[in-house]
Length: 234
Length: 234
DNA sequence: TCTCGTAAAAGTGCATGCAATCGCTGTGCC
DNA sequence: GGCACAGCGATTGCATGCACTTTTACGAGA
Image (cartoon, rainbow over all chains, first blue to last red; front, side, top):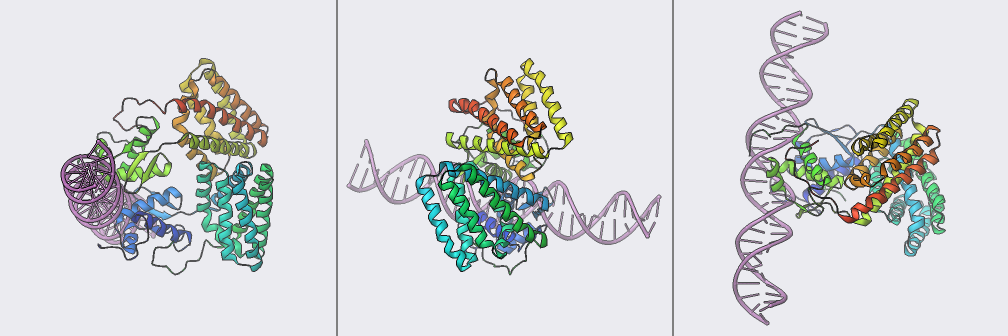
């Protein structure tokens, strides 16, 4: 295979592979336990095995794929136990972020958090799951950044990304949207008045509830595969 | 270059490279900010660039090296700010582990922790830094395992390894050994009586003190380079 | 002398090829 | 009939080569 790739997205070839393969795992197109053959993937994306190998290495570091020497890579299969462990960690990490945010956020950051949060209230009334999900992500990212601790931020984002496949369906539960907003509201209120203990507890509770909501879906079925979008996404 | 490597240690070539390069970073033989030339490293260890590249990728994921596309890799340079952030995270993570350990450790785990801890008391009186360091590591590892949470364990061990270069000198401070043991003692006592709050607080304080002790050395000079042991260590 | 531009050199990114390893299948033996 | 082992195919691991990017060195013009 030679010549330019049909769709030049961005970054190096390896980055594209990481995104492409990672997306397919996160979206469930590649199922847990499925074997990831280097040659097939290389052919599938019209690149050589080298960048595919490196991408698999990175994804392995991210915890999305498992790799055993001389035995190839498979999509990481997370046990119910490990999943619980990750949600538990997430709850603790978010609690830390919320605590720190309550203590350390600048006035500007607090203002921005509050404004965004209030703006998202409208989406709840409209029942706009898709849009709310975007604001939800924004909200949590602000929390992580507000902690003003690069390392905590890294740990939190990493854990969050590993949980992504299991968080997707949560907003499909009826009434979850409004409940989520109210939980955010408790966190915001605590942060605005600088009450780190309350903010931490509220954040922890919030994740715990998400965890339970997601567990329902996780128990049923990892994820239904969708038609494969040949282009390299995101 | 062909033929077998002089020292066959274990695992794949990439694993050896990760250990070899990682060790040289951790021990300070490779200084922060130093450029890591793929060809040079490959020649240095008598392998091709491919495994070196993969090793650098993994080390990058571990946070030991920084990599910019088309610009090569350098030994990660941690700012004083980032270092503080990592110690802060470490304190929080250890606190979580201690809390969970207090709640979840089995009787056998508690017993083992207590016994090891008491055994190490002797080393303090002897002033055996080297040996105590071993028990210290054991002690903390027991704490992380005792949390019975795989993900928390992973996050903690990862953070700990990133802090390794900066923890080395702490026991050179006079009286640090005895102080460390006493701090451990507070943690153990709290865990034995199942007091998670006290255990968490004690663990956090412990790390904070280590942080301050290490900061002294970090401020002075990263680490003095030693003669390069050509063999691939550990 | 300083600045800018251009070209050579160095170094990274990816492709390709070969060797080593793993897993499977078929056959012989118990 | 079941188990062990040898041969073979499939797949991974590593080496090498080439193309592209970045950096550095050098020279012309202001």
